[in-house]
Image (cartoon, rainbow, N blue to C red):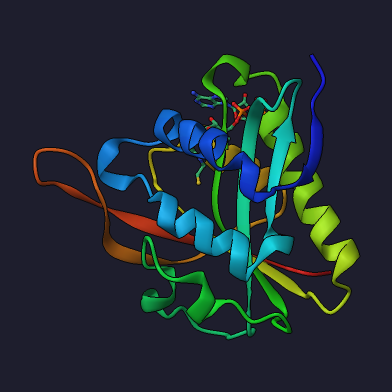
Length: 179
Ligand SMILES: CC(C)(COP(=O)(O)OP(=O)(O)OC[C@H]1O[C@@H](n2cnc3c(N)ncnc32)[C@H](O)[C@@H]1OP(=O)(O)O)[C@@H](O)C(=O)NCCC(=O)NCCS
């Protein structure tokens, strides 16, 4: 099966939310309100893998931030308002979320979605110099993709992820400076 990478549109919302529910435990899913605001505030950062008849097989959401050297945990808050953090002139891409349909996982589409969406954003926005994200220590597939794509760990945000039974896991912060 082959899918088309394209920018997301408002009509993709039901499929994006289906993927979100399939991708994350209920406690860490983000809301439709959050995704709608991302689409409005940073449409050039929202990408989907489109199949036939409106079905989506993956999404990746990103926004642009002013480049800062340190790690400010407040900027990574779940369900934060993209309208308040996105800067159309920002030099760093923050990849806020990515999901591939469970039926499609393990066949290379996650790596392709991540690599191609980032390449497209850097090509369309030549001022971009860096990319940043956070990841749960237990998300092995995502960590393999980020490492393979040149991201390196630069810090942690303690207690970021709910992990069941009241436990919390840190978020690992990873950055890829542009070469
Ligand atoms: C992360 C995700 C998008 C990856 O999509 P995918 O299509 O399965 O990824 P790929 O098939 O491209 O595989 C990527 C790498 O992960 C590895 N991998 C896949 N599933 C794995 C697993 N369960 N455990 C360990 N490694 C795994 C693959 O072998 C591959 O590594 P390689 O290139 O060294 O062989 C997908 O698993 C997903 O949607 N997960 C739930 C949401 C999530 O974790 N999102 C990322 C954080 S926002």
